[in-house]
Image (cartoon, rainbow, N blue to C red):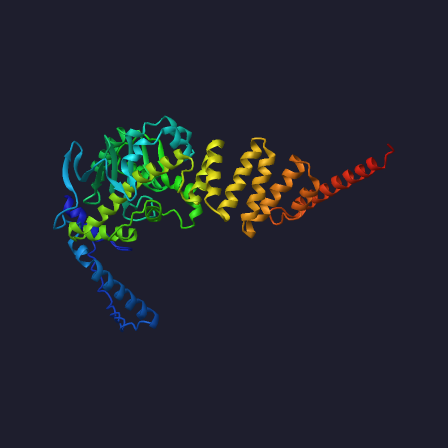
Length: 457
């Protein structure tokens, strides 16, 4: 039997059937059609309708504000003149704006070249950074950035890195401009090359903002981070010296009140990120010219402020200086362990004022005299300070006098008198113990004096 016949016989065997029987399948029972579900349009709730309307409104506003940029995709080269010229480097094209300022150039009342006269040891004391004493300030590098925001972190981009350095006694300003986001690597390599030639960085709040931000950009762009340079942050110097002015230490305040320079038509720093974003979306390149000028003025202020601070600190209290600043310099010299300079500044501040500054300066002079072992002069300065002090200044002066009269001059009645006037400089348990101790000492001294008077001759 061939294969075909075997298969035919097997195919005809069903359950309970016999081989060879022809099996005809029974017709399938008709299946009733499943009725289609009734679909009715869903009626949105009031909350859903309000949400949809809000999303449509937000989408419309976004399209109206950024529609051109969204439709265009990545930013194209903007029309109009760029604020910087292209330069080809081994690492790619960078855009640079540059100028050279003469040795006679002043920023306000301060000549820029005066910064070159700052002695390293003096700057180290002024900054309270002993490590700066060995720095060659002829090769310092001034640095200031303009960024896409002030938050810092990986989302903030420095689109303008302003640099300045001295060539002879002329100041070279060298601004690196980021034409497009994503083209940072050549700019960062140019910055690294310039830092390699410098001896230190000079910034204003650069320790907290500019340098940490730049270091992050080096890492994100896989560019080797330059060796960190000694860093002079003038913000900290300015805070210590000018804190008694009461007007804050913002850059613009120092520029106007200390240097006498008033910017005309300066762009508000808060608007700078938006101006750069407009540039990326196609605005004229010339619209960023005020931003570059703002950055130039910041760099010039760094050089001018360094020269002014160093000159005044060297002078130790020249006539005509603001007594508030002299008091600030005195405090810096005291912290720098330069008592002679601190005393000279304190005496000059006291001579130039008749109120609260005089009182504080005399109190500082008293502290220096006490450290030198001259208790009489220390007490005299405190008494003079009391005569000029405001009410809120008197309590600490009384406390100092109580200590000097008790331990230095052994004048217990005067010590007790000033101790009772100490609050709130001293209060509670400490004051109670001081007063009780003085009362016991005074009582004992009085009894001893009485006994001495009663002895027969």
